[in-house]
Image 1 (cartoon, rainbow over the protein chains, first blue to last red):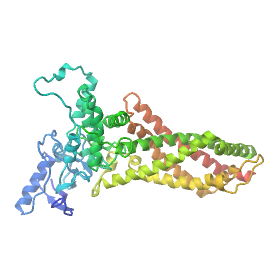
Image 2 (cartoon, each protein chain N blue to C red):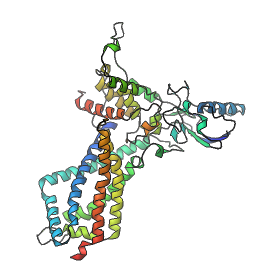
Image 3 (cartoon, chains in turn purple, blue):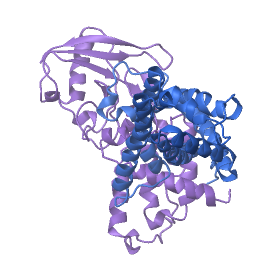
Image 4 (cartoon, rainbow over the protein chains, first blue to last red):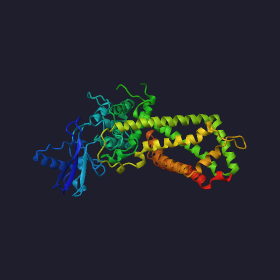
Length: 250
Length: 231
């Protein structure tokens, strides 16, 4: 198939970027979107043009590394998939495809389509953990009774791969879906209770410091999330933060 | 972990709590306002005297006065907070997408809350100038019972086609604003439950359309019947 690619090129974080057009032919419908970009880069290298820089790692939909805003949607058309799981059969020969980086002040562009998502790591570090004794007498997690429903919901929240599609999709570049998933995966379990109040207060505070926008409850994040993280998590975070703010001693 | 949170003032979530709380209070205000307006369906001298009596009561009864101050403060807070949120949201994405399909994953109203809010605020200013200001500081005639004749001011305003058209447009904008805001306020306050949320959402969406429809019905009635001409 023959395609026209319009790709965001930006030499460095400070440089001014622009959309550049690359015609490409010989794309096979069995290629993944990332393989199509590999194929483009091979051709660019042959022509002596600098290849397009983009994020990728596992290429099987579980690492959260691939990004891209394709034809106006995070991870392109299709639901509950990452860009590595998007295949060229979703497009027709003759199509023009817009490929842009995830855009947010909190996700600065490193080069071309590659963005710095370490803001997520800092939110996680602010409280996305539990403190347990690991000196050899750790209590077996299975020894603590957990209702099945809570375990399932905590697991669902924990499936968040931190890709940033929620931020990229949100009209406000809000990180509420990510933060709420990372908080919920602990707040639903007994092991998460001792640090529950501090966790929600500190992670939300870090989220604010990073410069993400606010939640308008449009629900776009939930629709575009490759892992189907639910808005229920955002409500849980809103609720936990409200109670923690009211009852915290600090 | 040292807490550095700004708690219920200043944090992004807190700003949203205030939006939700003031928004829901203003929804309750709309119900009271509409119930008062329904009296305008009674025309003639009887309707005029009753409506003016009601106007007198609403501007003097202490409980209503307190509620009216809470309403002014809510409108102010909702506006200022909303502007601050919208500014932060714009700043959070300094470089816009070249191609963006927002309609693929979110409703129109949910994406245009700030615009719809500003339209509503503009309407409130015009509306308060027309009636609230005139009632308090304007030179209104007295009716047979010695009450200010708010009724004549009201019905003559809606006898003008452009005033009614503006009103209908503004209330339609408000309906869209409420169609997202009234139900999403619950999500903001953390109320999301598989058993109750579907009912809450349906009720609030119905509220969002029916309440403005009620206001519009009164306005259109006054324009069609022209009760001011009969006296």
